[in-house]
Every structure is written in C-alpha cells, then in structure tokens.
Image 1 (tube, rainbow, N blue to C red):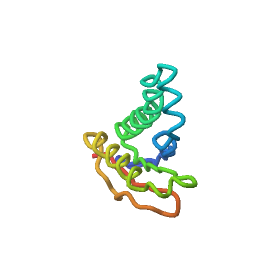
Image 2: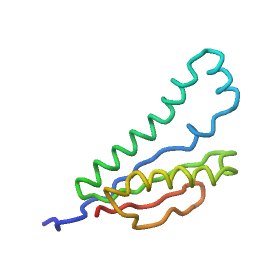
Image 3: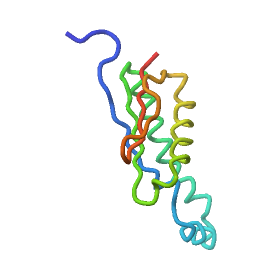
Image 4: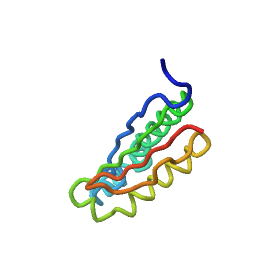
Length: 115
C-alpha cells in the first residue's frame, strides 16, 4: 500500500558545461550570425529539466537536482550556485526546498519536495 503524499524521488541531472563554454564557441556563433539560436539551444536544456521537475512535483513526487562539474568547471562553483538558485526560484510555486544546495565532490545537489 502506497502512502498518500510523497512517493518517489526523481533525479534531474545536468552539467554546467552549457553555461561555461569556451570563448571560441561564442565567437564562432557570432561570426555565423546564429548567436541567439545557440544561446537558446543551450538554455533549452535548462527549461526542459525545469518542466520535468515541475511535472514530478505536481504528481506529488520528490525531485533531486544534481549539477555536475567537470575539469576546470570546479573553479566556477558560484555560477553553478546561481543556476541552482534560479531553478529553486522558478520551481518555488510547485514545491519547497527540503535540502539546501550543497557540494559533494564534483556534484552540487538539492532536494525539492511537493507542497
């Protein structure tokens, strides 16, 4: 028998690589004239993950959001924290933060529970 309320913990995984691309990539996008398209594609991944999380929260499930850092990205933990704070603010209407964002090795994560 399943209790009413929180049933499952879903993982939402993404990397910070789409935010910390090389300057060469951005210069190439500007030269080609599709700078804004590339930017939208990169943050489209963020929006997709946010919609998934909101869907799970509406189904009364917990969501754990993990942000992975690779290589030199570890030098930019502040940018990762900004992304997670933005995620929290946008999902705040659908759930509440159960565990604040914390860094464990190369993974920064937090848990949102439904309201």
